[in-house]
Length: 88
Image (cartoon, rainbow, N blue to C red):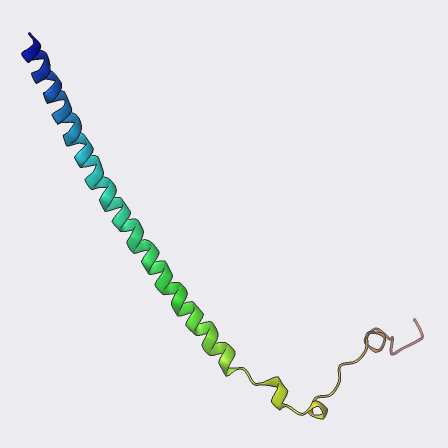
């Protein structure tokens, strides 16, 4: 009787182990896909960072431009001053 119970328990454990191994295999595949997805996103991010760096390096250096070469911006009062003082 004890031997029959132990054999039943061993079959049950064997079934549980088989199910667990299948679960681990499926989980491993899912994790691999997730890892590949993250690696692709990192590659895209690196490409974007390189593009931004290239763009920033192509901008002119404002410190090289003489200060008197640029016309100053008008003040706020000059911007909103009405050119016609008469309202018709």
